[in-house]
Image 1: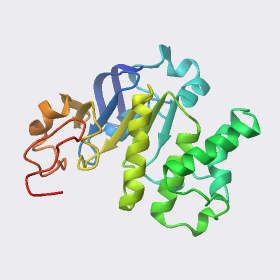
Image 2 (image 1 turned 120 degrees about the vertical axis):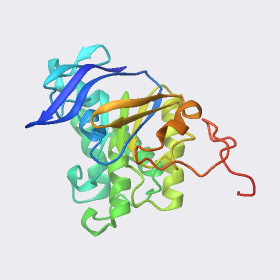
Image 3 (image 1 turned 30 degrees about the vertical axis):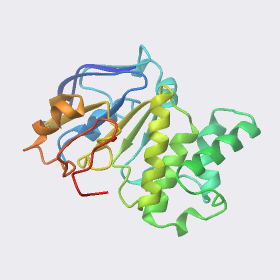
Image 4 (image 1 turned 90 degrees about the vertical axis):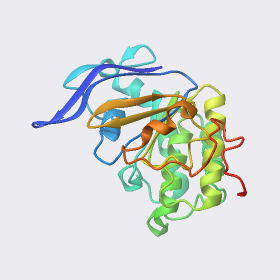
Length: 250
């Protein structure tokens, strides 16, 4: 579980996150929605200690994040909005292997994780490609693969579908669905719910650093108007995407 209690974070006189209490259960898929500047990215960067709260607490798996940053960063995988912030190696395979190698895993296990992660983002066979020659969307996929290869207890993705083509988007969504079903909590940070509403167990919306909406998608989607969040143009919303299409569309 990821839990915050009264979390507040300031930048000078500006309050970026304002007294947020939130719990994300194991295996839960949460869409954290809101406009740019609403505080959502600042909030999730506390989950693995990239930021420290000015007030309040953050716990991962029952332990304070500040008490063991290594444990928190192993338990919480993070995919940043800008993939250049986390790509560290010259080739695709080496970059995806970087995290598992630092866990001290056996070579066979590292190779398995790399292969599985690359398959999940439609990059199988691309391990020798140079990172500096990839498109922006391909770099995003490598960043996602690197987080998947760590096999974290919790996975946080900040605007993960920017620049992805349809096949890659579908592959990533399928993998996230599998992870959630296996007990990994998934947090997707976005202002655009069109790709992810059918995946979500819960939608949490932020505005001005505070949580303003929190509940199952079918109950809260109509409450998102006015918060600069894009929702699917459907007449019926199904939380698992079984009938989330308007009549006449396929």
